[in-house]
Image (cartoon, rainbow, N blue to C red; front, side, top):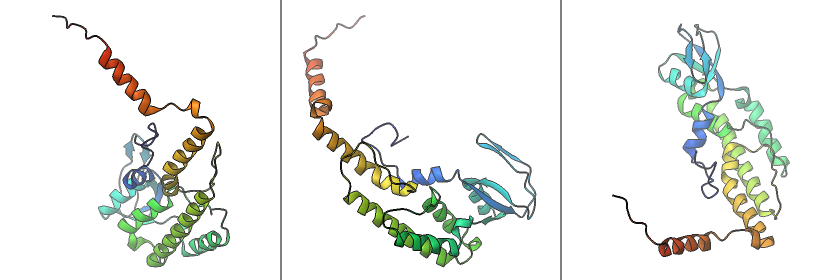
Length: 209
């Protein structure tokens, strides 16, 4: 997958991050009766009318699109909790409040597909946008104070925030390490040119008939 093995392609797209978030479990309340569903990732159901059941977010959205369930927003999406989180983010400039790793992607999917199931939806969306803006500003401030070190630890970051800082931190650490240990960092361009010259100078083998 892009971003895991190649250090020069370290940024996931928004679609890739959202795809990973769709495996998070969420509660639905079916309005129909259905036998268990068997997937590679697990078995879900049986489903009974008005009996809550936990399913992956992607399955909840699929059932919701067919008008067969309501989705219960997670407790962290309540106005009261988000208000406390926003206040905590503003009061503490050096720390991040605890939120689900995929809070941005989960909330976006619910806003897109289950807005009628979210109490005070517009207030919830406004609070999450404010929280995201404050946290991104804190991330940017943390990066401005960044200095060369062998490790970077910023607890409670979300997937979206990690995705933003990963390329910068990776390049910065490489630059610091290269500055302190230039002989240990291979020159990629020089190595590539040397391989090209060697290939050009190598006698060509005759093809077998």
